[in-house]
Length: 112
Length: 93
View 1 (tube, rainbow over the protein chains, first blue to last red):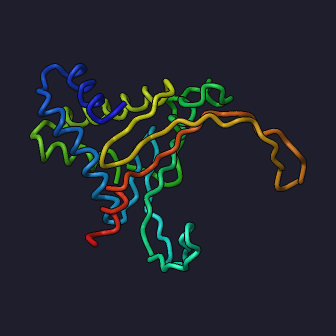
View 2 (cartoon, rainbow over the protein chains, first blue to last red; view 1 turned 30 degrees about the vertical axis):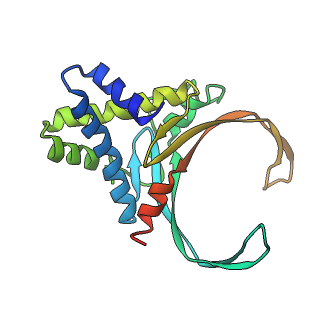
């Protein structure tokens, strides 16, 4: 599924919205998430998972082709941790999958 | 940031009622979850890809007892951030 398919699905579920409106809605969701990560905020979506930004220190790397040493600057990298409900839904073989997936236990930090 | 902040954004941007915005945000995540559950990957351009991987069973060890155990095969979800997202969170270069 691509973002376009997701927008189509939203139009199908909510026929009152125009395609343009559905586009704005879907884009707004990912824009606000991107902005939160830019601020270094943690994102917690109940039943889905959480996103955090980790810091990577500057290091010396090597050009794998030439073996030449190159400086790699420090950077920030986004990470996603899948939530319990989704983790169990994805892995139907999981022994926890049968246990009420709707009742999601509180994850690492308490969301609002 | 939580779902409530995303709802706030939709409410400001689109002019929906909070209830309506909350409902559609919930639906967006539910649609994504349903597809992932079906084993389909979900690609959000400019943000990243949610990918499904099948892991084979492997041997592991209980780190406390040293006892050898079989870690069962499983299906896991991973997120690969897009180049655009990685560039954006590292600020203007």
